Length: 316
Image (cartoon, rainbow, N blue to C red; front, side, top):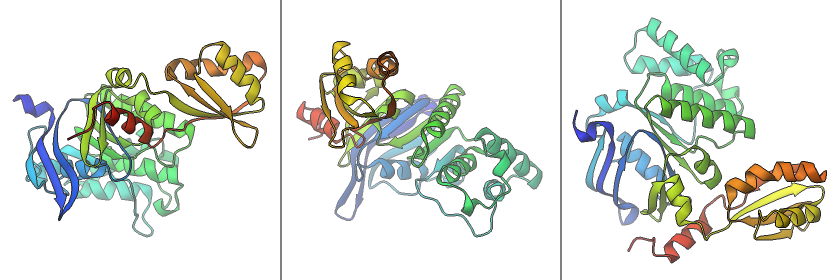
């Protein structure tokens, strides 16, 4: 096995749509585990994913997916599972039929396709609904049946474009646990997202993209150290925001706080997100404060990019 047979390699890759830049001079070596591509709309995340899958051809540079070139579609087709951001289901097709039909396209015999479809659907927790029409599924169920389709042929690489969109908090937690189990099995997962805190929880490696360039990349801990001077903003809704703010300051969990106009929201800034999220529940319970919701505000990472670029992290 060569050194590139266990990596996804981008070597000085650029993609232009006429005169419009998709990505420019991207060099990446993606190893097994979860690699998250993060950036706002138009940053180049989906372009990189489509280049990996062979749906787009690079304008310049070389791409290799575990030793296979995107110019070898049949070999690549079996190697990769791709779950795009948007979906469309044939009228009348059940979730089971949707998954099994793709297995037929991969060349599996009917008996094997049935078995693999059932296993994949069970793994994403949709067994009870698999014989219902997929077009009638909720957003979260649609996400899960498409994930089942992408893993059913047992690929070595999973490419997931915004796979947590539309999921409630419990479903998001379950999905992240599932992704971690895939990574533990030695798969390569490439996941696009714009929600920094979720990326932080599930990723082994992060690639920050901005305007088609790689702004920064590395392990999660190293990335957070690089952004240590950039406070994370969080919106907390509760019944006693002023009291909660006082206790958070007392514990040294926040560096700034202000109440929302409706009187039930508290916008805080913290430089230690792990400590804040671990402690806020205990603080609220001890003070008799009822928490309604806790949500990061820097979801689109715009402030993070501005910080990194201002620190010299942008491409020239």
